Length: 160
Image (tube, rainbow, N blue to C red):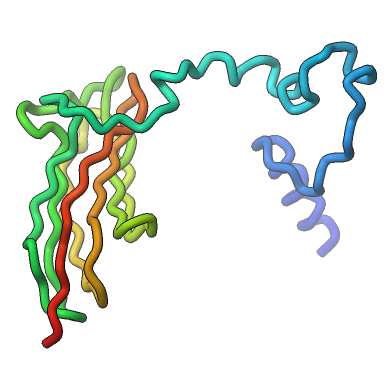
């Protein structure tokens, strides 16, 4: 049992997950004025520019997700939500440029997510869901060459 815990702890460390809260480190101990976390990452956080980090909501023919769903549904009844990446054109599905995942949210709660394989997966998914209350359906997709893209659609839920 102890060996399994040790192996699991080692795997978490190798994957970059912290198994215990980090101890506060004085900047003088790290030898730099940067925070200890930045020193541990080796400056990788600087590779992600603000354009890459920010969620994109502008319309782009190849990247904006298109949501196909009813405007109103009955409470608790199943219905389909289809998300197609590329509101005006097809997004490529190449080994060097593809859609990593497509996720569906209801307001800020993630309902479902599908990870796509390069080359073999077309960036279109259909989720079958049921809702108890209305709100905003949000589709989020993340391609390999930019930040995630988002689109939303209001949905109303009627009593049965």
